[in-house]
Image 1 (cartoon, helix red, strand yellow):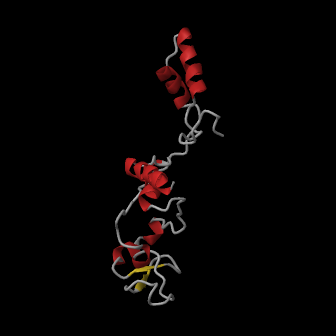
Image 2 (tube, rainbow, N blue to C red):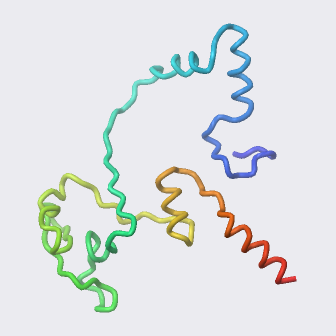
Image 3 (cartoon, helix red, strand yellow):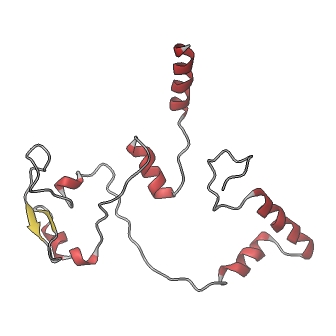
Length: 150
């Protein structure tokens, strides 16, 4: 939960001002931040996994690749035909036959959402985990809109 002085832009998971004060007080005992981080680095056993994120920003639409809707109306579905994959019940685009052979080795996320209207802001939050700061253009536009609306 953010404190009263927090503007809400900094996630609560990050170290706060008080945490830095506590760490700084350890310097009196000869411990530095580097020593503290080294001491806590191996404290808990970690579950090691590897992930390859394939981010196709500006790539083809999902309805033309991995989330085809062949039963939908012609206005909604893509122009390509679905083909079967090595996962029962899952189809992908006819132009991805080699991907269809290894479908059991990757995950397709079809339920990703964002609280942002702009895709750019949603992508920034998905890739970094932080709410993007407003751009200078957006802030200036909002100020101009307020000035013109009064």
